[in-house]
Image 1 (cartoon, rainbow, N blue to C red):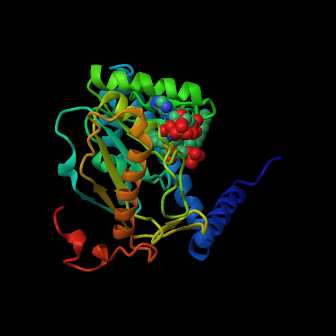
Image 2: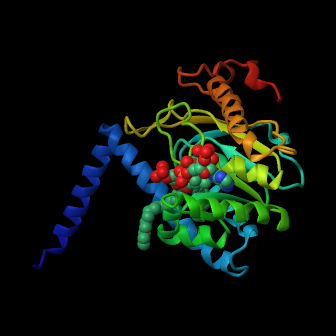
Length: 285
Ligand SMILES: CCCCCCCCCCCCCC(=O)SCCNC(=O)CCNC(=O)[C@H](O)C(C)(C)COP(=O)(O)OP(=O)(O)OC[C@H]1O[C@@H](n2cnc3c(N)ncnc32)[C@H](O)[C@@H]1OP(=O)(O)O
Ligand SMILES: CCCCCCCC/C=C\CCCCCCCC(=O)OC[C@@H](O)COP(=O)(O)O
């Protein structure tokens, strides 16, 4: 069907009008646009990262490139990320980072504090996320198949060796999935077994609740937003055995939950330290 050239312009204008009306009128539409742009932008950044990372091949040093490429994204969304306690990261040795997992936006907080030679453990499905999957593979991200517990555990055991022999750190989301409902899901124990097997410390990291500016359930994503990323003191595992893992996981989760409630500003967990000048969060921890 031949369309008069002016008709294309009119159609385009109509579409733009429709999109901008949706943008201004519907907060759900805003949520969808923002999330679509977030994913699309990451896919685009991954396309930029791939040729640069490919020079080294699959290598944890490539994580630095992904980090550099992603650092600006918080500005696009007006999210202020405050880091506290970064001095708690052990300076040289390998360790296991555990952090809470609310959304794919966690990437922003993660990139803010990601130590050198530190790779996340990710679900295998991410490998198939187009350019992002390939960039993750090139950056040495460790993939596990959550549907095959035995395989996942043997990957984690190999990682325990790699931590020591290749001097790397790993970042695990012990909830095992995104938790959009505030608070924290029960912790899976893989990260703690891994730390005990390698006899390396656990560094817990807590990202405050996004509820003030982001909620998947309510389809809400507003600007500006504020998030605190708190690095807690390392928990040693020297001398611990697999029998100690359940208690270790429980105690780390308990301390993370306490801090999550303290630093979250959504009214669920207090968070006064972010609201009041001079509150606990203002102090250097
Ligand atoms: C520019 C482009 C940028 C692109 C983006 C870049 C950044 C990308 C960032 C991506 C971020 C992506 C983020 C993501 O993708 S998050 C999703 C993927 N991550 C995880 O799932 C990590 C957390 N999960 C675990 O740790 C689980 O435990 C695993 C996966 C290991 C098994 O889970 P599963 O549900 O199958 O089983 P289970 O937990 O009930 O365990 C069963 C039993 O086995 C015991 N057990 C467990 N482990 C070990 C062990 N090592 N040695 C000995 N025993 C072990 C365990 O204690 C339990 O026994 P018991 O205690 O009941 O007696
Ligand atoms: C040619 C194929 C194109 C496929 C396009 C796929 C679209 C994906 C778009 C962008 C990728 C963005 C990567 C963001 C990484 C965020 C990591 C993340 O948050 O993973 C979730 C995982 O922790 C837990 O998953 P579940 O909550 O259990 O689910």
